[in-house]
Image 1 (cartoon, rainbow, N blue to C red):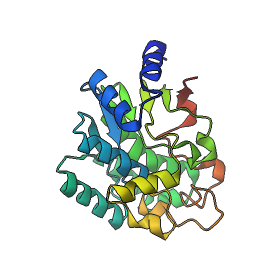
Image 2 (tube, helix red, strand yellow; image 1 turned 90 degrees about the vertical axis):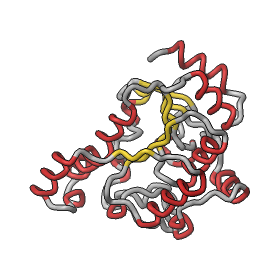
Image 3 (tube, helix red, strand yellow; image 1 turned 135 degrees about the horizontal axis):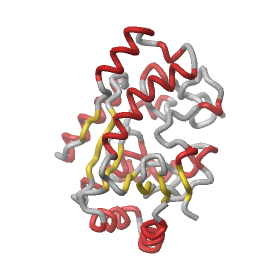
Length: 241
């Protein structure tokens, strides 16, 4: 872990509002800072901040090829409103074609290994390309989103990707997020209104019932302990204390 960078960022940003922290990071790490969006509530809040402040932070998304129509609509609408690019990273076609040819288009339902293979091809490898050469990765993670993330901090060292992860709205509640979206007239995914708190690929996401865990709708056919796809794997994250 680059403790010097971590400590410097902590000292500079801890008392800052999210927008101010993003502005400081964008200035301190010009050309080496990116933000990943999946067009959920939290990501739309951060996208709004970046675009409205005209911050030099590259916004990207992982185009898995299996997204909801509602997600594509929000993606397109966001670009129309803000007039800014959102960079898409697609899976490499060779391993994707090999997997689908050998196992079919829905092999992820058959085993955890198959599902992880699909996530690896459609999400993890494109993410590696998107993060390559950068020092700061901005995300929309919030502390209350799942038990696995409650022990995290707003700034971390990602060992697997060898960069700093920064979560500007880490301490926000869901109500704060929704209020910010309403007050700023930010486009959002209407699936959220239909019981989808966490939205990923269409075949792997369902609505959550009252009282269910936040991520119960993701890969619902698997055990709860196996619900991460690897984008924010706990094994690769070292929390900055």
